[in-house]
Amino acid sequence: MREYDEYQKFIRYKNGTQAFLLLSILLFLNSLLNSLNVQWGETYSIETLFLLEISIGYYVLKNTYQGAFFDKYENPKRQSLYSFLWGLIYLYLVHSPSFAIFIDGKISQDFLHLFVGIICLAIPMVFLIRTMVDKSREKKREMK
Amino acid sequence: MAKNMRLKSERAKWGMSQQDLADAVDVTRQTISAIERGDYNPTINLCIRICRTLDVTLNDLFWEENDDEGI
Image 1 (tube, one colour):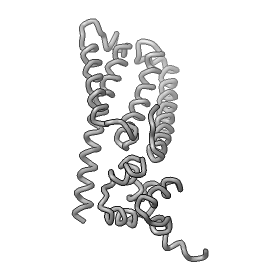
Image 2: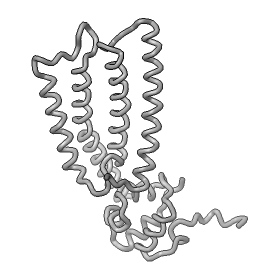
Image 3: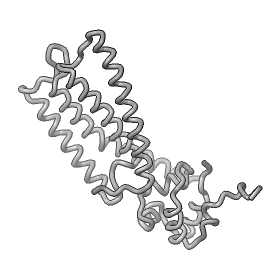
Image 4: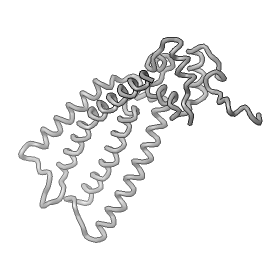
């Protein structure tokens, strides 16, 4: 069971609310598109899953940037490395000839796997950016 | 929210980094940073743990001086 401190829980609740609102807005917009017979996914379920992935990606990456993704006892560098490796595995699988990201110009289920791989690769990048920002702020504070 | 410079100066008196204080009170470094920046108001339990670690009172660290009027 992950253990987050009170500030991390506060940030996670706030980001969770924002992700939920984002998902609601995206689903509403998609329903408008569907009412106009616009289909951009192979099936309606794939469209819904992709919108869900967008909101989960927002939640995960915002938590990572604000220091609320990894709990107190995890090693963020090691977890970031695992996430990076998972991302590479996902991209390798999507890259193989049997996978089709688009079918008749619409996103397929394999596109969902690609997106998950992109999020897994983004986690360590966001963590690295945040670490650099923190170090830069620390230097500025010490100079004052 | 105003920055908590008293927390930062008390921490510096003990020669502790934000990470050291965070480890001592069982939170993350980001939490201590957010408290010092004034971006987060800690719960009373966390305030007490911080005060015990730095050997100060709650008044010393968390009482806002300009709130004395009218009390």
